Image (cartoon, rainbow, N blue to C red; front, side):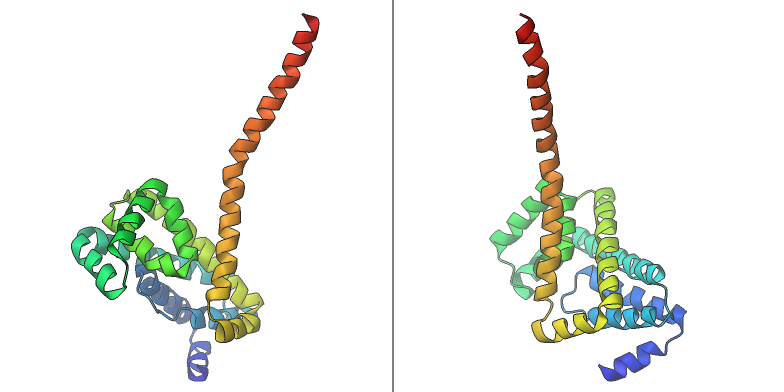
Length: 219
């Protein structure tokens, strides 16, 4: 790890952005075990020292992640049976679970894909299942772009502002703790968004009752 940091920290800024882009392309395809975390941590240190810009780093990483997502989706869509066999045999996804995943993607569309970006265990199946289920490409790209930008911006911000703490948490607890925090934040956002229409309905119903009360009094 020390040699990696020494190498990465001495790259010219254009090559650093390029390295972020290509690492996130590979990660975005859905290949499990791609070590993207050291690149974010090193990028955070470079941003802290003024050698990189925060938003250019986010743009490079998010663009790479989105390109990888599109590649993974396209491969799954073009080679459906092969990818299904890969998920079942190599990644140990139960056939029944794969069927549920396809139904989940068909039912919830991009929302399932967005949550998959924040939760590691369903990350790869979500990308590949979206291709197998033939999710509309425009919807897939839109939700993938939203997920890529928010996810990379969050990771790069944490690495920039709390790099040492993030590194210690990653070393001692793994990514599970970070994943739980990010998933809870995403779920909270979705719950608030889902409850908003219900709240508006209640407010309108109450307003209707208040309006009807004077009318009854007049009668």
